[in-house]
Amino acid sequence: MPALKALYTRWGEVINKECPLAEYPRPQLKRDNWRCLNGEWEYAIRDGAADMGSVTCHEPIQYDGVILVPFSPECLLSRGEPSPDQCNSSGSVEYTGVRRQLLPGQTLWYRREVCFEKPAEGKRLLLHFGAVDQCCAVYVNGNAAGSHEGGYWPFFFDITDLIHNGENILTVAVTDDSDKGVEAYGKQKLECGGIWYTAQSGIWQTVWTEVVPEQHIDSLKITPLYKDAAVEFNLQFALPNAPPIHVRLFAEDKLIYEGSFDSAVFKIPLPGFRPWSPEDPFLYTVKITAGDDAVESYFGMREFSVVMGSDGLPRIGLNGRPVFHSGLLDQGYWSDGMLTAPSDDAMIWELTEVKRLGFNMLRKHIKIEPLRWYYHCDRLGLLVWQDFVNGGGPYGKFVSQYLPFIGVRLRDNRDNSGFGRGSRKGRAVFERDMERTVNLLYNAVSLSVWVPFNEGWGQFESRRIAEKLRAMDSTRLVDHASGWHDQGGGEFASYHIYYKKFRIKHDAQARVQALTEFGGYSCPTAGHMASDRLFGYRMYKDKKKFSDAYELLYKTEVIPAVEQGLSASVYTQLSDVEEEINGLFTYDRALLKADPAMVRSVNRELMHHEAILR
Image 1 (cartoon, rainbow, N blue to C red):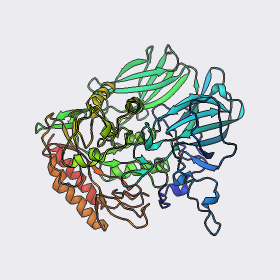
Image 2: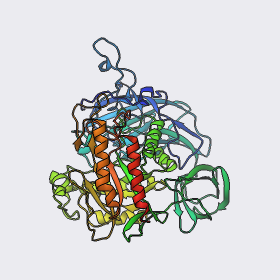
Image 3: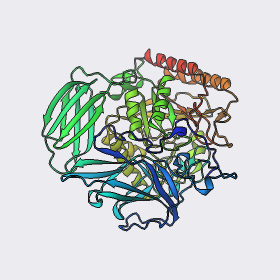
Image 4: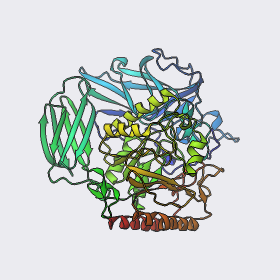
């Protein structure tokens, strides 16, 4: 592991060790009868990779200590009972986390005793994991419950027949090849530095259980039909033959519709509905009873499209009118929890600050967040561009770094080895994960744009992927190849500009013009950096120089481009991450480096220029 400094956020300093991140983890399919299993578990790291398909649990005889779930062993907030390497020379304890790196060929073991009651007849107990990086097998009382591959997606097992009344033992075995295997890994690298971050592993989202009827709603798909003034529901059930369905819709706690359906797919009219937008993020509540099952969800009425501005140029449309997307690149890393935010309040604070600065969008970069993050974007009114998590590799420097800067584009439908996609299995894993991602986030009201590939990392057949994605979800736009190696697909001509002036270029496909990464300005902040090694695209010595450069960049290159067709801008980036110090906020979220009044003023000017072209 890299030698990073112990840099806590103010939320991490007061972490709830009994049950961190205890909020209900799935806001759009919510039930009352649930239980959070976050907290202290035993852990051990052993050489040798566990057999994920084994029905036998070969757990260690002894464990190494205690880990705080859902924080990975590599991060600060994984701290549990202190181990000898957490004592300084005077013998006093320094709570700096487990701070151990899981390597390829090793297994990370978790163990916890949990008291369960056998569910009543006709009920089932489901054990949920928000995400486990990368592959895992789950055992209950030594018996296999199931296994899962892929470190960014939720999964569950029915453990009803594996438990007994009283104390039960849950065991989880995890392996992680990080960037050395075929699974998605995002910005994690075992040899990290610069724009690549510490590889982390294990359970990094909430573990929880819920009791459900045998026949219950497995999934819920909600599609706003904006032009039809209606909303469509598609319910998937655990067993064949849907039971009778009863639905109630609420607007601000007022019942506005009630009806029953015999089919699992149905539409509800919403005449005179209230549209969702960043300025008015209005959400409807829906309560569904299906047989003995009862769930609560929500939705917003909105439509994403490409529209023509008054100047005849294509623009991003929201509810039929052009809306400029002014956003930040959001890596989703925290100085103490890495991939895991220290608390729900921390996520809310950050998103609220982004709104306060006048931004209306975040590009969630190479990461999938817990579902509560999207819920907060929905209710606060922040548009989301969602990257797919990259895999493959190694990425050739000529393909991902050198050729793009001299304007050379490579075809991605032939030999994909330069893109790091020579593996047929790796390509299949990407398409598996694409389907998982769309199904997981389909109901996110704020999600406006899918981004399958970034800067050629693991890119392949991006035009075909964009068409397949559009067939899966026609309600959103697609930026098919963000930054480099544009294949002419999707709805965007997408630029990443760091070392030269930005200029709008003619696009033969007449797509929407989007500056999807730029800036990367850096300002060192003593006492708030995790590393002595610093990376950034351009360094400034103090907040004044940093703010002046930021303002000049927007006023000379970004704002003038709006009248030439620019419809979105994504500044790099929201916060520092490890060595990369080009964030508006420090890694511990303690300081904002830029003058907030200036940032708000720049965003107002951007919106004004776009508004006159409607």
